[in-house]
Length: 353
Image (cartoon, rainbow, N blue to C red; front, side, top):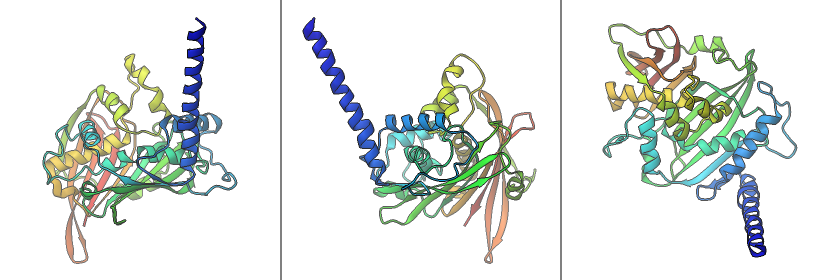
């Protein structure tokens, strides 16, 4: 019995040393460099510990006035030597509306939203950085602007870099908004993909209050023309929430705590904004062709109301001609709306050329 106790004590001591060194000390040292290699990233255990600590120690919807001493004002991290993982790509495609067999040939481009999926840990690093001035829990995605400078398939050819950085904070009536830029660069350093996410730390945490209505009016696409509008009806089953829970990174504490509630049968699970945007882009590609989303292109989207699942939605797609520099480009508008209802979950546009 004495030997068993000594063995257990030695095992616990060794495990404690492992946790302290690999998941705390080593991760803390790595985050101080700001530029990391994809093979040596900080532990998720350490990052989620910081996430919950920050979530419990700061108020939502309040901007910390000053950053801690001796830290950079804007959080920024870069991960180099990244490699495209075909398993992650197929997992994303399976959950994001493309199907498990996408891309089926080498001629099809990587989905436009896939680089954001690759930036999941980078986002967590930014949101838990000492210089990040908001509570990382409960952030609501209210808008997004996505650009492709060259085909995303460029990331297949060799190693690439990912970067995440805070651009600015804005005080609004609903709370505080923050713009976070995610970007992917080729091995030579040329930009391939960029996305600016606008997140809201809401004072009242009401799903329908999404911030600045003035900006929504300015960025709202033209009303669709019934003559050229395509409607796609989709059933969003409850398992979509389960797939998104482990397939997508979602920087909301609610996402981490809502799975047990969903499994008990309560209809409180919501689809992530990344899933809604990716599903719309997948349907546009299916019905309008891959040329509709081929680089160079810019996608803008505003997220209105949360999408409760299970449920039924209608995706509407329409075409618009735009003249620029004596050339005519074909743009596309799209929206996701409640089936047989008046609730709009998301509206967006694709600008070509």
